[in-house]
Length: 403
Image 1: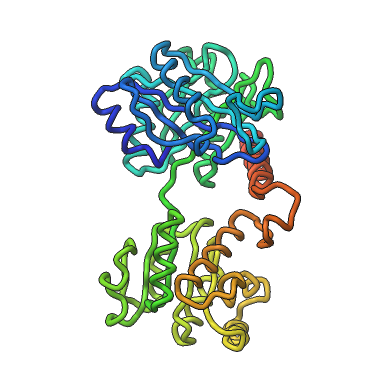
Image 2: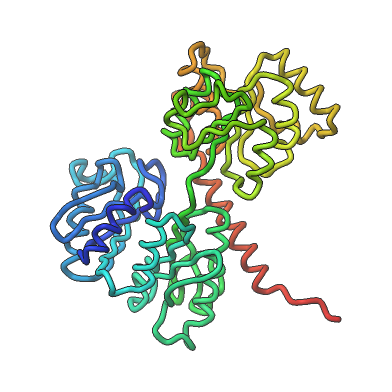
């Protein structure tokens, strides 16, 4: 929903009713991830996509019907063996799509969530997509320090469930995760949805992940462009003011003139597990102080440009600085995948491919060489969801030690 938040806010501000269709579940090979959304307003204008074209027409009609009825609906789309021309996904996957009508002013939590998403404030939007009819579509918007909305108009009855939803959604927001959450009506986590359970879809909206590109060289310009294409907030940093200029890097979100390690020290509170560091300076006096710090930080990816000889010398320098083999092992050097790249643009594709493979768990082999699932990260997301659920459950049941 984040990519269409600006349009949703415009509709909402003008008082126009609309419906949002969100992918809340994916099985097998499907074109869009959970969280992909299509919205339709009362005049029939549509923005966004849930399938890249496979089922857009059917979902559009569901949105129009939801606006008329005011009722949310959960619909499943998959390939039909009996009728290949039926509405379905020819790729063989299954999409669960939740369609929710929105009337500005009717749901304060949904109103607050749309405003927070459009404003860029980190927020987790938890919506009931399956469960008791009276709860279907109920929404809770959760930020780091507050929340908006309750699942039931009778707080005394729903208090344990609401507390659990807020706690679980906040944990998912902290991790930047989106996914399903199944709870019992008493707030306890459940393995499967069924009678007496509530299934929520929790969407975490957090600022774009950061890419820090160190070294204002010609290769950096290409890496900046592909970083923006991948959705990163991109910073270029170099200590040499003649090279680090906005004119040379017009697509960067910011260009900083500073020593790389010194700038990194000022950004510690803005780095997380999604952050990417591309060290392209190719100069030991810049690289070593920077990497000595970076390899001890909980960032997602660190790559450094240079020849294999440069890499060996770099490793020796890092060991001399006291880094362990495990810390040095986090460094991707030489940076990028072996594509035979020569030009800055080809090199940027090589770097981007390694970043995506590292993030998603790809094998880096041709897809034609394998037989397993194309999307490697689905199993990882399920495992992460289970870890998050168990961690949250442990927090709730943990008792203080006796004095």
